[in-house]
Image (cartoon, rainbow, N blue to C red):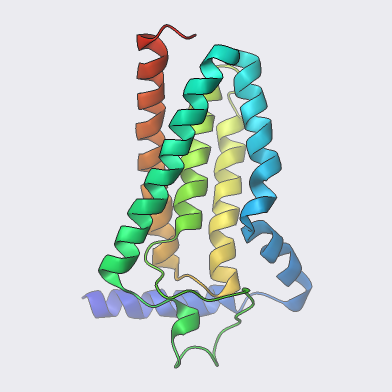
Length: 189
């Protein structure tokens, strides 16, 4: 059963990856670059500051730093535990796919880009929902675009991305709850 699932995953990867064209390659390289999300993160921090004040910012910064560290480290544990090669590392796939990423990396299960972007989207979206009710939907779309970029570039299978997104939802929600608890406990808001 697992072999059949991985076969479908590879077929879906090849289909999605081969939808790309050189016209769009530059766009997807920018989307996947971690530095390109800095303006969005700065805007979200500004909105948090504007709505919650300076005292709360310390809690937000610490909780977000812990959340990103947590998702990164758990992602690495899974990658080393499962040792599933990335599609760009598979010799029998390289001639059938488009590989445009800067580097390949060794293992791909599950996607750190997907988990981190989704965790940030859930955390910020839930925290700011009382003030900007539709922001969470914009952030979810942004996270899905980041996640798809990993398939487009040839560095992750769809299951890597789906599992990363799922873990990001759990992490974002968990750290949102931790943050809410800390804000109430220390009466920061």
